[in-house]
Each structure stands twice: as structure tokens, then as C-alpha cells.
Amino acid sequence: MTNIVSPSEPTLFRPDDIRARLGPGTWRLPLFHDGRNGVALVCDATFSQTDDAPLSHDCNEFQFILRGEYEFRVGSYSPVRAVKGGIVRRPSGLALSIHNLGDEEGLRVTVTPSQDVVQMEGHRERGESLDSTQPPNMLLTRTEELLTSSDQRRFTIIEDDLNTMYLIRERPGDVSNAHWHFDFDEWWVIGGGKLVFEVGEGRPKLQAKEGDIVFTPRGFRHQIATIGDEVSLRMPVTTADNVHIWTDDDSSAPPPRE
Image 1 (tube, rainbow, N blue to C red):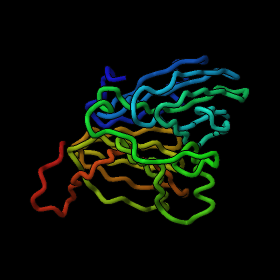
Image 2 (image 1 turned 60 degrees about the horizontal axis):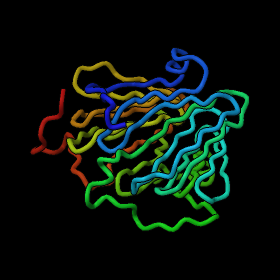
Image 3 (image 1 turned 60 degrees about the vertical axis):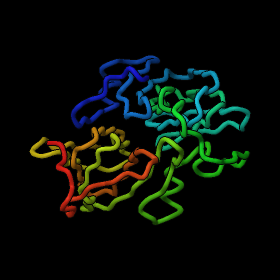
């Protein structure tokens, strides 16, 4: 995955359009590398099975389910089932078996840490103990359950030594604070609603909807607005490090990329 040529420009990926272009069957399309992970779109034929060897690195792999009904067998833990909106985490050192249970093709985004990154000194899994109850942030997170059980705006879904991922819920008309950073590329999976990403200066706005993926290279100023009548859901993936984020109020801020 380290050989992926990532976009140098802000990019909107439409998995539904990619699926229509590549056609039916089982395939894997690398999308980009964010400096820590290789990110790919995977299509699984109906009633198919994929078996992976145990992870050899020390960080998690995780999956976003965009379409279909899956069963994931992670190590020796009880199987978990996931549908659209589910996020499945594969802790390091555990084998993974993925079954598409439905009579339609499954579509998922897989995020795999790069060997060259996780082997660097200091990158180790944060101390966590897995158990058979599968608590949040361990094996399976069902976004629908989070949203119906709480009215909070932001949830932490993944947090380890390489990545932090949130689920953010916004109301129609909400606009995020504009900011930029030079330490990492940022990207989002859109879980619901419609959003407009204003990235850079004088560039076309990126209009994203449910199922889309937005990639922004480091250094670009970006601001996100929820449009339409529905609540929006987005899942940003960022670095786990404490990095400086610049805003328009910072008088000493280095200029963002244009």
C-alpha cells in the first residue's frame, strides 16, 4: 500500500461511481496514502469470503461498511455482523475472515497501516484489553446505535498510536471553523446528509453526499458546511499526534496552500 500515488489536490471519491465503472465481482482499488495508512475501496461479490493472515505490524486495521451485510471473524472472538454505517476494527496480531452474507455485492473502505510507518520507533498500540463483550472502539462500532442513544455532536471511534477517527453530526446550516495544518493529510468518509467542502483559495467546492470520501492534502485551508434538510454525518481520520492547527485568527500563521 505504500506505493499508492496520492492526489496532490483536494479530491472527492465517489464509491458508487467507481463501482459502476469497474463493474461487478470482487476487486480492490487503492485510493490514496495519507502518510500513515493505505486506503482502498473493496468490492465483495455476493456470498463471498476473504481470509487474511494475522497482522504483522503493531497497529490496527479498520473497515467502513458502505453497502452489504457482512460477518467478520476477528481472531478467536465471537463473529460480529456489520451493515452500512458499521466500523469494524481488527487489532494487531489477529487473523481476519470477512464474509459477505447478502445477495448483493458488498462495498467497504479498508484502512491498513503501512509497515514502514508502524516499524518506526515509538509506534505501538495503546494499552487495551479486548474481551468478548466487544465494547465501543474495540471490534465493532454501529453508528446508528451511537446516534440513537445519545444527542452529542462528536464521538471518538478509533484512537491508537497512528490514527484518531471521529463521528461528527451536524445540523443543516452548520459550518465548521476554517483551519489548516501542515503535519498530516486529512480525509473523511461521509455517513449521511450532504456537505460542501471549501478547500483552498478559488477552487471549485467539493459537494459530498452519503458514501463519498473526501481527501485533503496537508496545508490546504478547509471549511465544511452542511446543506440541505438532513443532518450530516462525517468521519474524519487524522493523526494521533498533537499537531498545531492554524486558523484565520492566528496572526503568525504560515499561509495555507492555494
